[in-house]
Length: 247
Image (cartoon, rainbow, N blue to C red; front, side, top):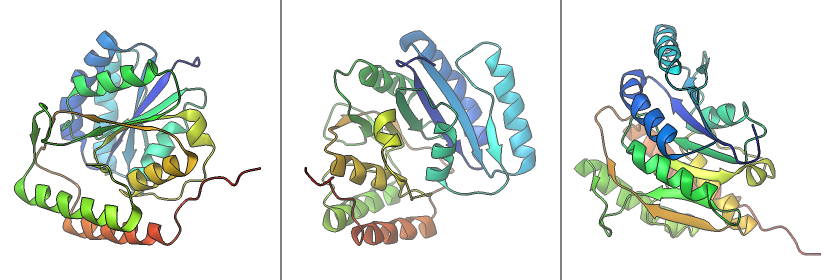
């Protein structure tokens, strides 16, 4: 890969059915609108039969889209953050590292547009999608998830001082140099929070881009996982990343 390349990782845990619907749309949008991009699916401990089936589906799609890499997978489920980092490790030369959720809630065109925006940037920055009704973008969420998101957002502002409208949207892009400069710890859904906290500590600008988004049935964020996310925000508060000390 050359310095302009972007690696987009899609972490997937028991999400093969939704992913095989989303992946052709994503590959088509990227091939048409974005240069120098590769897509890496990571099966994060999905059942063996699903991994075999998903790998076969990806291999078939690769005949049409060279930007799609062979599936990566492992036996045990480790979490979203772990899967993203495992995928990013496959492309040490990529200038930009990105991830998007496997469920297809983020339209393929939005993914392609944000990657193109990052590639055209004149300075290093974090680029992230945000789901907000305050724009002309269409955002559809189940009512209970909408309420949970608002409560969590207030909790994050209180605990961590992150004043973004949406920290957990599953579409983010970061510079490889920034990623390589940090030691990462969060393996689950709190990886998004750690990423934003480390960007703040590094003085890295964050571009929060409103996107269209449509929630799909079958979310893997269970009530138990949501409670764990609240706890992770509080835990991160105890050890906030600090800016580097001056000379």
